[in-house]
Length: 130
Length: 322
Image (cartoon, rainbow over all chains, first blue to last red; front, top):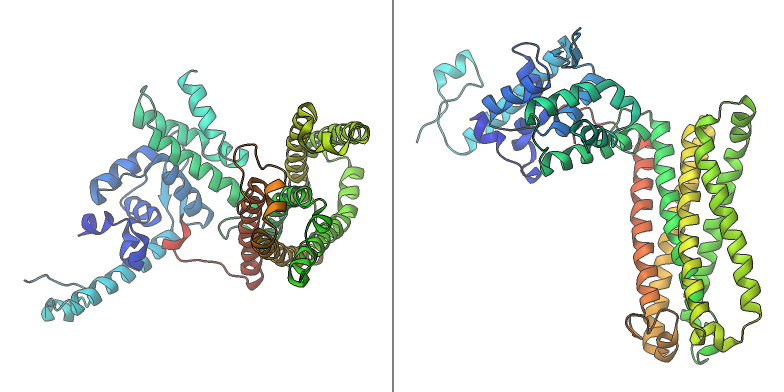
């Protein structure tokens, strides 16, 4: 599903294209461990099907670092690795919850069934049925 | 050109501070991604685009990382850049409408005269605003020069002084020469005069561009108080309004004259060079395009100022990257 949503590129779709935001993709990638630029692009391509251009990637890295959402980790190599900070983790959680709410809302409005048993445990988990 | 040179050239689009911090990592990423092969055009465009965006961010024109005052200053300077386009367009319009009052019939000319006066008064008001803004920043500039910490300003100042000197000298020479020519020679009969005037016009354009660039560089580096920045941004917004009035008045004047005085429009400067038209004289087309570009820049700058004054700052994670 992430892959399908990530391939959307139009900005007219409001929040639907939010998973495609470089910041969200980078934070998601760093959530599983520290990575440098190349490792980030490889990982993002793998899990989201999106290839970030070098300019876009470093522009996003600079913004995230400015906001304290990621931080560089000590390294002697010029390949500078980055780690997600606690603020970054919190921001990612908030962004993912927003996406999940949107997905749930869209699912409901499309008339697709939501598993009640699952809803009771995790309100935002849905399953798809034709 | 070696690969390292190509990468260095691409990184040159980024501001120096950004380059010092992220340049090595970005260069390593390019090396890891493309090996020794050519960097694809798409990636190069991506780098240039983000490099320009980073420069705009650094000056406070983009993003919300700069302080509201810095954003106001950046917006005001963008309005000044728009005004530079208006100065060139205004000069072209003034030359085109030379002898306009005497060449056209009297009749009911109330509206067209009012429009012409609006262009003139709008221009005068704009020039006055820019002059007042220059006077406001002058004490800070003097303080900076006295402190001796103005080496970074030397280059733009020297460039502006050089082009200004060349402009003044060429203008004096041109005026002296024109003084010895007949009306006919000055109005298309003497080809050499036309060529010199064309070269002089280019010099005016270069002079305005270099002067504006120097003014922007200087104002960016000056230590200005909150009150001064707010005064400058208020004047920038007023300047934007006068630019909008000038453009609207010029287009109205143009429309009326195209239908009531086609002979005057056909004989204006620029006609006959590539095309001849009484409805769309090339000089007015160029002037209006310059004004539209200038006004677009000024509106963007004024909006930036207004947004910064409201203290607007997008903090949404998704909206933070462009």
